[in-house]
Image (cartoon, rainbow, N blue to C red; front, side, top):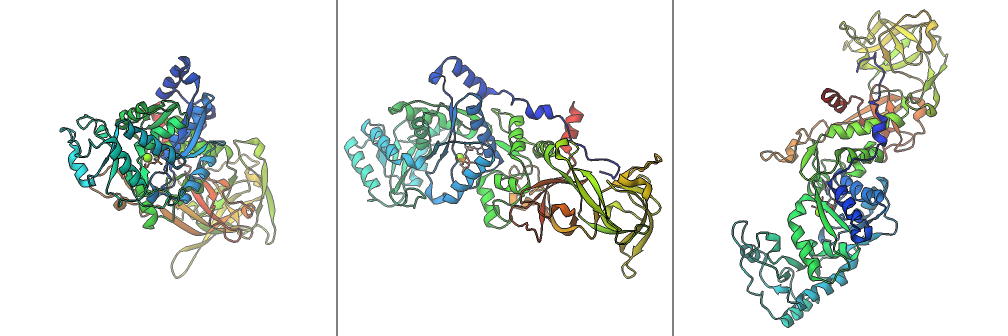
Length: 576
Ligand code: ATP
Ligand code: MG
């Protein structure tokens, strides 16, 4: 952006407040309500596994589940799917609750854990055995793989499939009592080894695993499998619409089979939708964990991470994330969304709410030769042209200022409308100034200072004689400015689809320039007391926020949330 333009918002505020568009899941729910299915009730849940921090993909699921409950006057539970104790931790539980709340959703008193149902799940398993629908199997994991068959060939029945009910009951109880080593036996549902759906080929529903559980401690040495747990937890909670991502489509027959065998209070309907993928981003929790543990990033909340806590630290607003989730919609087919759309939603929101301030990232000293030494004037500056209620503030002006290095060129090309020898520009809110001299370091030839004169008749930045200038620069007063550290971010990966490239490992696609730290930046004195998390628009530079972790009044640290340039708005314009 050159000096002549004022930053402009991308506009279209109606769109922000418009109701979220309809989609196939809403159609299903509305049809169910019409038919009075579930007595017209709508009950959803968000079921994270506490094995990592949640990310923007989870936000899609959160917005969908909590959003549907809200729209149809229903409820949405938060349920931790904690059946995999070796990978789970209360740190994750706490962060997930924090993040869901921050996104703006509440589960009231409906906080559940699958582990709360372990006793009940055990009883359900016993019932399946009693009904001849489950058996204890002694095959090793490897043998089981061999017996399972392939997509083209049916599987083979386990030699233990026809154990008597009594033997199965005894063995399952012995499993529970810790009489067998880890992995030596499983409990399997007795369904159909020749099913075209491999999930139905006598799936394991319990395994032996001596792991300390973050809630149940060492009470259990057997743990129920996900498929068994999930549908029964849904049914226990009276969920009506069990919404999950597409990779569970082939698990649906098993979900339904289990619920059909047991006397459950209700039979939720599983509905699958496409998960969110974003360009320049990896979304798998395993990969995000690897980035953290191998220290490619500073933590789960590194502002480059697609985690909710990372985005929050970067300066995202919950409103922008919710708006994004509404706009991308809900579909049945996987696709990758352009990260520029997410940034566009963020800019639209920040444009309305972020106060404008002046900050110089790469300072160049300017001395106004005809401005008296020691004199200080204060100018009124509008805080947000998009929001009259945001008011104005005073900014100090004095003889020595800083401007942006890139706003001065000694040998300026024709279309360079910023400062150059003999050229006049506006210092925003202040005066017109003309460059009269350039001071250089005699040793290096580097420009160290610019000399200017100002026109007292242009107070406030407007000329009484109607004389126009093409460039408007931001600046700060050298004596008044605060020193700050500014962190500039780019995409964490250089490839548009870092997970989609079979040839290259995603860690080899990391962007070496994803973080640039600038020290010695100069910001308006009014930012001294800025609270961590406060968001600003630095005039002509972008949106920034005070870092939640590292900023202090002695040493303010700002994260660049997003630059002003909006590639999505351009794409939209071209398309329309
Ligand atoms: P994993 O199960 O491999 O640990 P996960 O990403 O599926 O990883 P969960 O904690 O099981 O993590 O996810 C909780 C919910 O969020 C699930 O309903 C899941 O379908 C949904 N979800 C996860 N990732 C995405 C995504 N990228 N887009 C939409 N929904 C997602
Ligand atoms: Mg999952």
